[in-house]
Amino acid sequence: MLDLHIVPKGGAMYYILRNPDGSILLEGTDATVPFKGPLPQSGDVNVEVVSTQDTPQNFELVVSIE
Image 1 (cartoon, rainbow, N blue to C red):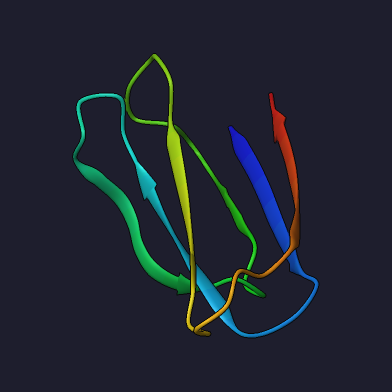
Image 2 (tube, one colour; image 1 turned 90 degrees about the vertical axis):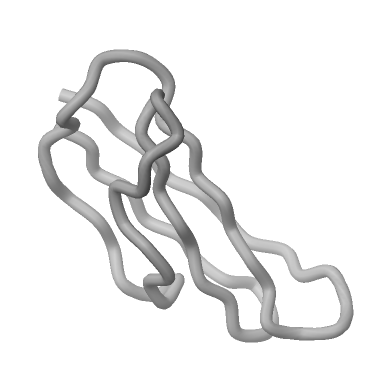
């Protein structure tokens, strides 16, 4: 089970979760919406955080795996 929270420290952003094989686990979700769910594949999950601003933004990433 993956429990993921992103706390934006500036402008708006969203995130994409990718399975180890590169397929999309969760697409284009607002960064303020946490994810909690099972991982369908074993291996490394990629978390891509995308800013909707023209300048770099800071954020806090909190991850736990059960």
